[in-house]
Amino acid sequence: MRIAINGFGRIGRTILRQVLCQPGRQNVEVVLINDIAPVDMLAYLFEYDSTFGPLPLPVSTDGAALTVGDRQIPTTHCEDLTQLDLAGVDVVLECTGIARSSDVAERGLTAGARSVLISGPSPAAYVTVVLGANDSALGAHRIVSNASCTTNAVAPLLAAVESLCGIETAHMTTIHCYTNSQPMVDAPRGDPARSRAGALSMVPTTTSATHLIDEVLPHLAGRISGAAVRVPVASVSAVDLVVRTARDIDDARLRADLREATDASPVLGWTDLPLVSSDLRARPESLVIAGPETGTTGPRQLRLFGWYDNEWGFSARMLDVAARMAERGTP
Ligand SMILES: NC(=O)c1ccc[n+]([C@@H]2O[C@H](COP(=O)([O-])OP(=O)(O)OC[C@H]3O[C@@H](n4cnc5c(N)ncnc54)[C@H](O)[C@@H]3O)[C@@H](O)[C@H]2O)c1
Image 1 (cartoon, rainbow, N blue to C red):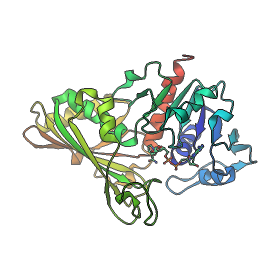
Image 2 (image 1 turned 120 degrees about the horizontal axis):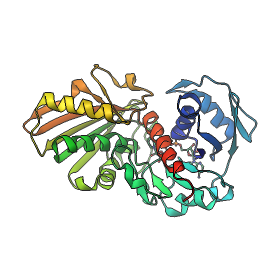
Image 3 (image 1 turned 30 degrees about the vertical axis):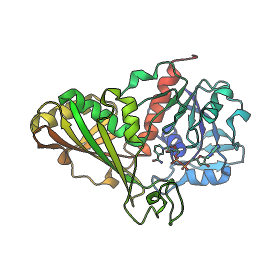
Image 4 (image 1 turned 60 degrees about the vertical axis):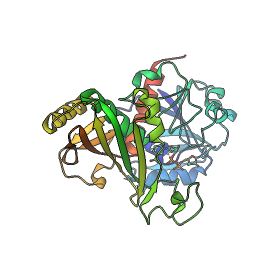
């Protein structure tokens, strides 16, 4: 699979880290990295990562390419992808966060790439895909959104619970680490709470997952509500999901069936250990269900709790969905 990474920020860099350092990604060839930031700065941020630690490979740049170990990856510094030649690229991983209009989302195709996978919600995507929830929706679509990290965490869990005991209604709270969408000190950023210093307070706010779940699990549309609390933690998030089920299920059965569902799922995990968020750093699953925090809380009522590394797990799904897009060949 030949990919180009547009936007070499948290997600773009985590994707490259996985390509270079994770077993099972050897077939991925990164043919281009494009970002508007200076390439020597990007090389530095790629080698020294405050969350994942220093890269175990030497990194250097001559301005036109990033050299990591024995691999050389061409780099460009271009605001508009249509200025580049992306012929032969299977998938552009669009990780800038700006591909919300079709004008921007289509730039990769105009430049000659076969398809574009956007690392966030986008009204310009032809379809939103979450592995473990609506895999078959991918079809032959050429501009795809990989939804959000929280949607990747919650939608497969909802799909599993729905098939075990049906869902009447559910409410999820994501306890989400801060991201680059929040400031270090108070500064205007869209909604008032998100304009407050991200590392100093718990910040109640919204999550795009609420409407994305309706999109990827349309049979549950209108029955799942959600909210977010951004917390002063730099890495790893959690979801706390309360479900009113359609059918009764006892605690032991719920846990056994959920455990079995996670064993069969390529994106869900399970732990029986009393873990805390930092223990889950760099876990590749979309969600790791926390056994000690999960169970029935009353008749037809459940509480489910799970961890997800919003950067590492989501980046792994970017590569998984891109692999499926590349396997389809030329549309
Ligand atoms: N950080 C997370 O936990 C996370 C998880 C899932 C999804 N996402 C989504 O992924 C997207 C990127 O998030 P991030 O956290 O990596 O952001 P980031 O700010 O760390 O990275 C964005 C990068 O894009 C570059 N960029 C901006 N405009 C550009 C342009 N026109 N051309 C080329 N490069 C450009 C920036 O210089 C920066 O390096 C957002 O949509 C975000 O919602 C983030």
